Amino acid sequence: MEKPFSPACERNQSPILAVIKPILKNIKNVLEIGSGTGQHAVHFAKQLPWIKWQCSDVKPNLSGIQQWIDDANLQNVLSPVELDVSVNNITKQYGGIYSCNTLHIMSKQQVKDFFHLVSAATEQGGQLIIYGPFNYSGKYTSDSNADFDLWLKAQNPKSAIRDFEWIEMLAQKNGFNLVNDVSMPANNRLLHFSQSTTGSL
Image (cartoon, rainbow, N blue to C red):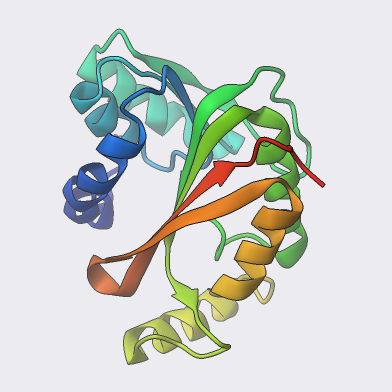
């Protein structure tokens, strides 16, 4: 198969790296949930050589991710594992978890399952980074996000841009506190959570 390529990944990887690099400066391993094409994994692993980067995604995407990993030939980016957030098969814990443009693809139940998964898969005091579009106070942040939400729902009625307040509530319920909410290009946000010392509720 032809190696997958996402223009959006190419555009946003440098702005994302600039934000996550200081967050992950003391992190030894990261689980990426929804590695997509694999572009972020190889770009970040190359720039963050102290981190072992574990890719994951649904089965149809694994071969494309592996192509990016093979071509990059990096020692610190690992072959992708199959992962369905509703069937948690992650058996180890990570210092950091990163997920980009996934929560609006998932159903509401899958988003809830996502937070149960990351709660179990994050080391005490670990970091959670989520990138994508979000609504605030039930409102779109831009006309383009409103159009994107209509497109999402046309592809899958269970998909939708999620409300930030709901995401923060789920994070808190599963033992994560919001550290920062960063404005990113193209009307996206980067949400940085840290696992509280008390763990999940």
